[in-house]
Amino acid sequence: MGLRDSAALVALVLAVTCSVAVAYDALDPNGNITIKWDVISWTPDGYVAMVTMSNYQMYRHIMAPGWTVGWSWAKKEVIWSIVGAQATEQGDCSKFKGGIPHCCKRTPAVVDLLPGVPYNQQIANCCKAGVVSAFGQDPAGSVSAFQVSVGLAGTTNKTVKLPKNFTLQGPGPGYTCGPARVVPSTVYFTPDRRRKTQALMTWTVTCTYSQQLASKYPSCCVSFSSFYNGTIVPCARCACGCGHGGHAPGGCIAGDSKRALSPGVNTPRKDGQALLQCTPHMCPIRVHWHIKLNYKDYWRAKIAITNFNYRMNYTQWTLVAQHPNLDNVTEVFSFQYKPLLPYGAINDTGMFYGLKFYNDLLMEAGPFGNVQSEVLMRKDASTFTFSQGWAFPRKIYFNGDECKMPPPDSYPYLPNSAPVAAPVMAAAAASAFLLALILVA
Image (cartoon, rainbow, N blue to C red):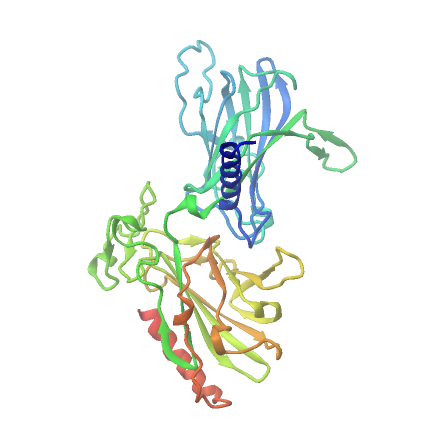
């Protein structure tokens, strides 16, 4: 092999490695969305398939306005009908003289139906406006499905041509889908579970998420404070991009301006463009971690999530934190908590999310645009310390996207002359004062 061939091989290996690594999430290494097609019957000119979308991501869900699935037909197939979803465009069906297909486009795009549609248009796990929960948060809500009748297609396992070039918007960009692959047919049980049936043919498509593909800039940032230091470490300036390159290309509005209270300011746009409150960081979401209290055997941290987007409220939000003391969580107040164990024995990552019907909805920017909780953790005498920023998290994710952390050299430092045991009431008062400053800012 010549030098030129070796260089080409190295370049190919690097390209493949980088392309795989871009969609790899170290805190959720097995997370993906799998789209499964089960052919359940043959028709005179094609087949009927049940399409099931399963979200196996532990903390990343698909929020409103929901998913859009697209693909390219291998031949000249058409969609005669869909139950539980609809194609966004019908396309040119002028060559059909009798029954008109639901969609004649070579590259159809399918979306979920809204809740409340007539029962004859519904199917199990459909009609949720495209919202799909994260598997770690709500396994029952992590599935979406529809039934499609395909015409001008193969009518046997050997003549069916698999669709190709699958795409998934969830709801925006970020997902990359692999090719469809034939797998062993899905097995079904009858309601009494005494008889098994199986699909006539099954193929699956796996889609993975990349934050770099979703956005050039982070969508959230992190700030720090502590009871032992009066310094508040803010989000980095322009952490989520400033001006036309960030999340608010149309500008921002001051939080105390009259425009923030004007009618229609909270109305979402079809293109999903944000309207942010003017801040130095210009992030839609800020997560604040405050070291609040120190006890003999325990310590307490407060977490506050603030929404600065006037056009977005976050339903079923999730917050993931990586911290070595999360292996000994004693109590979480006003949030749900679930440990994440991507590597088995290493228990340093956990997911926080809201209590249903209480604070699982993070409202748009304004007086109600924040949620808060406190975490009580037991100390491990061999590792616990307040020095060198140990008590602050290593990583923070909001809704599956990694947040911009402050630079390590800016973390609140532990004063050398700090008393051995500061009174708890004084620490609580200082914490309350700092949190009030953070929420007002």
